[in-house]
Length: 427
Image 1 (tube, rainbow, N blue to C red):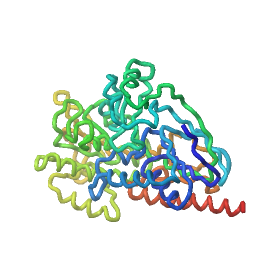
Image 2 (cartoon, helix red, strand yellow):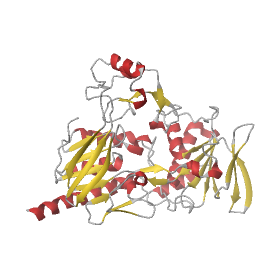
Image 3 (tube, rainbow, N blue to C red):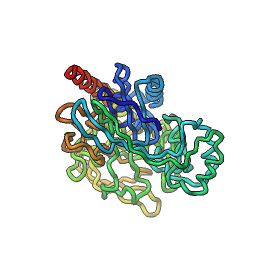
Image 4 (cartoon, one colour):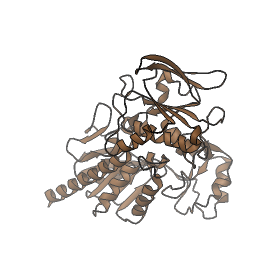
């Protein structure tokens, strides 16, 4: 690997999701040198796993494709995938960043022809689909992956399958001798765009996630609805493959709860409203969606979308925080128990499938951030006291895609300001 060129005039962007890509591009298109670091094998983050955006219901591929074209055409951005920042030292305008790069075992000669994948038998969980299905141990992360290059799962290295993949490659792109390496870069400012992760639903014990197969999370349901997902877009129950036509959506699963996430995750209400459209599109007049909610939070232009869902006779709203979920032993159907607070009557409602509108937890909760980076009470990144390190997108606050892009643009401008001020002070 060629070490990226970086100086005190360079901006480091950590995270290659929609926020990181935006921050990197905005800074680069203003003439700044940028190193974009992503720990996964490809850019795109959680946005790349969405089926559709709300409220327009368009596919994320359009926005990602535009950003990828901008990236490919801009020499000011250097992209490192399978890379993690393991240490940052220094001060505003003068940092030293240590970056650990894991081996892909596939080099730049790869043409993404797929011969290597077809040659192997071993399978691994498909991370792009949240482990709902499996892929070959040599795989392209997803169809729009950038870089458009295969990756070999480490579990295959040293196995017969690895040898088969190497033998099948006509371009000498398989390099099983790749090793982990650590590089050091001199940079002037840091944008933390590490994004968010779904709250661990197994911790919400009364809802039975992990015990009851027909209780899934909203991010998993997003993949189930996608024609490129594990069920080719058919809404099927994980337990038995039966069609799921009566689907419940439970709001605030892990959010606004002193036992879990104290904050409102903001996107969950809109995500569930959007997903009722998937149910309607899949089953037409046979569709039935029920939204269990404490209250529904929609703002700005999203109000119109909310009102349109409200008018759909296939969607029912129940003002309630369900107490628990049980499972019918005979059918595998999840049964939701709770109290409807509009009328105060108890219910035990049976559905084909339950979708937990899972809360947003900052990915930064699992990172060893520099000591001078300030985080709020939920772990979201506020930035460093001297302004040299900046939080962006959903690493800084629970945000939807649109607001994440706005936040990332602002972060890029703040990083450029750090570079300019440092240069002016040194001249």
